[in-house]
Image (cartoon, rainbow, N blue to C red; front, side, top):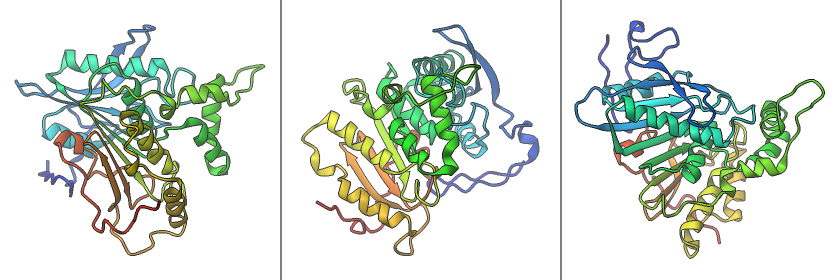
Length: 339
């Protein structure tokens, strides 16, 4: 097998020999496990790796995307975690968001909690070093856990998250290429298609499942860190989820922590200005994945708007695990605050 050189924040991964992976392109050291739901007894599958160290090691909980299952490969990430000997688990939490049991349901929450319990029972986990990460629909599940998971978690890292499901529904309605997502939200909020029943948007249910409309558990999260990333071009020409979904969630969480912290919130004027820029591409020649805007509330809630579309950037995906803040913008005056 070729040597692999991992450089944090540059993240250059060498090509691995094919024999290191199974048929699904997963590291051979991982395995599929069965976890019985503590709520309804259903068996949920997950990919799991237990650290080999004799001393407790961190746990990464990777949450799958909107239309995916637990078993979608992410080999670069997991090879890095194996090299660092970090526990990880990738739970299914009821699969794609196309059934009432999925999409920020109570069962999703209990399944993720059960997966963490499984990893603790079968790995060598430092329970003070549990980190939840996800992008797109996995980012949605990550911020949902931030709002509702009844346990202490050190960091949450969410990329390109849908935080208001009702708003996202209408954003997709206006873009025919995303009709599949409106169908899935119809089925998740009202019930799957069957004889004599046509799914429809249940607006109240969509709101109940929207993390941005939930109360922030301030006391539970006072020692946690929430990383929020979104690409400025997402929701425009090159992505699924409009970036204001993340910026408004930042505003909500910060306000729940401290209603007086108005100076770091994103104004509607700022977001509209950036939406004008997103449809024409970068206004200047800028480096791909560069942090354009970064705001930080007391090292508890960090948000970065980056030069990207609907992306997860390997250079920052493990910032929480490594205890490193995202880089500051190269030119902090590029995006000035508009009153």
